[in-house]
Length: 138
Ligand SMILES: [Zn+2]
Image (cartoon, rainbow, N blue to C red):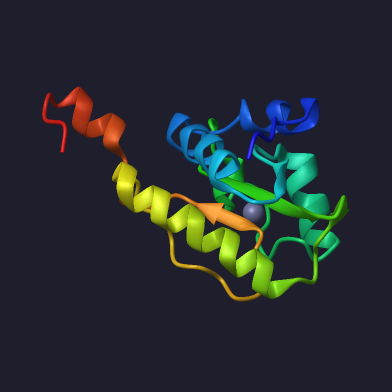
């Protein structure tokens, strides 16, 4: 497929950790369906709004969306031009692609949260930047 990120997806992606940007770009290339990045970094106001609206269980600054660059992004899959919020099978398939690519790239992700299939997050112990600084890339 030859999907391209929309302006709003790119704007969200730019706020993400470079490993997540790379992962998302490869997800889009591998996906049979168009994707959108709905959220990267969330500032204090956005995080507390997400909490109040039930879209996040965490208040600022406890979400990995609150790191800068963001250690998490949210995505949605388009099926026939419509955002497939309730298509768990399609979401699971797309997550499978993401986790497969991550493993190929040596990116460690947190396990899937069943109530939040739209959320991709780096594992807390995945800090390759620190390993680079110490001069030992693994
Ligand atoms: Zn999220």
